[in-house]
Length: 233
Image (cartoon, rainbow, N blue to C red):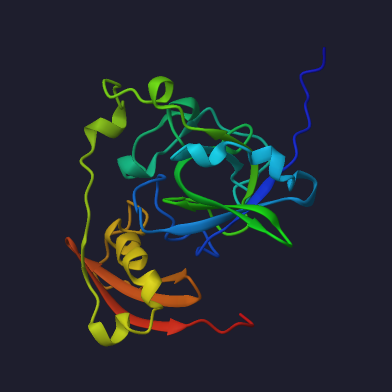
């Protein structure tokens, strides 16, 4: 039997992240983030999602489409450890894996039947870049999938930190009302790579058609500008 299998995308996600920078490091960290799962034409039968609306959460199995590369390394440097310690790739959630597959648990906010697109899944808390191919969707089953007693390995050894975000009201008003809470939540999660700590460095992040520039000093993130992106850029 051959160990080579071909899988195809069943859907793609439409999110507010046109690039990787700024995407939360795990799903569910910023509950205010909203996204849509759009099925590929061959998978747009309403019958394929019958009963899915009865579940509060779903699993998305997807591809790190911007992290594809030839070959792979058995060890990686998890950003959560500051990039200073190597761990086995299978003991991490690094995108640089033999098959570059990601797994995310997201809240299912609703199932819409669109005349042109077929069933559309509205989700929250997704950590996927816009256009990411999704290979499978499965319901989250609490009795089997939830393990409150589970150990978190090296993740438990590093305290989760959230930044205090200073965004002047006149700048925040430039963002659509329905995107403001999500934007502040993303910034509070500290979009920077863990190994970058220069307080004078200005970072830029694209989010929901906006270009956000900010600095981080200690535990405070300060938004310097928030402008609409040029549609042609």
